[in-house]
Each structure stands twice: as structure tokens, then as C-alpha cells.
Amino acid sequence: MTANFTNTKEVRNEIMPIQEYIATINSLIASNSSLVVNNSGIERAKILTTAIFRNAKKINMLCGGLNSELANLIEYKEELFNFIDKSDSEINFVFETNQISTDTVNAILEKKKLNPEKKIQLRLLAENDATFMKLKMNNGGNSVHFTTANNNMYRFEYNPDKFTAYGSFNRPEDVKILNELFFQMFNNGKAIN
Image 1 (cartoon, helix red, strand yellow):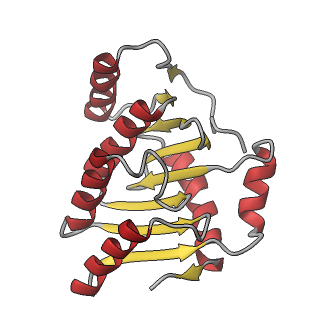
Image 2 (tube, rainbow, N blue to C red; image 1 turned 30 degrees about the vertical axis):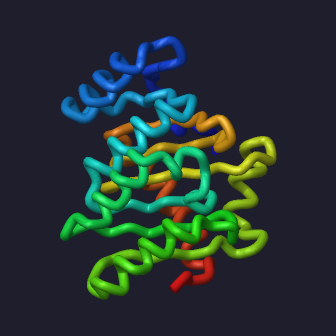
């Protein structure tokens, strides 16, 4: 598996000014475009991820532990919790590491406790999970993280240290692949309560 799942045109952002990048993201969402967005750096990672949070009803996240520089940004946390607070939202997490952000995860668990009908599930990746190990092997031994939403949106981060990723707002064929991988890891993971 590579970061760019299918042959497609890309929106590259390395030299695009931030305001232009935001306008491009909003345009892609509004037009239901299937273009793949190249995403590098924490600011653009925040823009793309929070756009997914704002436009989603169902999210699956394979992430480090919600303790990265990105996950600690105020805007990221606000949009994540705004998403969780939506009445019809559903979110599943698989954490790569047991070194999770206690504050963030406890806040999520508290929301689940206060609203038991809320569809929130958290799992810790099984040690030496075969699916995750294959993803890493196919990525030069480096970790990968990804978020999928509504069966058509995703952000696939192939360099979590540099927040380098690809994403799209209308690529159901890519999201189907990612969701299959996600649930293989999710089903083998240990529940966090």
C-alpha cells in the first residue's frame, strides 16, 4: 500500500499560502471533488483534519495516542470534541501506543459515560498487530496514521513526525480499503474503558 491509493491528480500545497490552502480545502468539500490533497506540516494537517471533523458523522481514527503536537492544538481539540458532541456522531479510535493523552482520552471516556448511547469506542492496537506491521513494512518501516469519515473522506499520514499525508473528501474506493484495514486492527485491539 502506498500513500496515494489510486492514480489521480493531486493538489500540492508545499508553496501554497495558508489562506489559499484553506480556500482550496473548502472548495474541494463544496464541489464534492475526488482530488487528492497533498498535506505537509502541522498547520496544513490541522486544516485538513479539522475540515474532516466538521463535515463528518462517522469517523475511524488510527492514531498515535492523541498526544502529538497536532492533537494538542486548541483548534484540533475543539473540532474533535465538537464532532463528538454532535447528536448523531460515531467515532472509533485505535491507538498505536499505550502512551496516550490521559486528559484527552479521559475527557472522551467521560462524554461516553455521561451519554451511554453515544457511539464512541477506543481500542489499543494489539502488540505486533499483523495489519499494522504490514502497513509499516510497506511504508519503509515507518508508522502510519489515518482518519476516515463518512465512507468517502480520509487523511492518510505516512510520516507522523512531519505530519506528511494525503487526503480527499470524496474517494470512497480509498476509504473502503482504509476501513477494512482499520477494522482488522480495531477487532484485534484491546478495549479502553
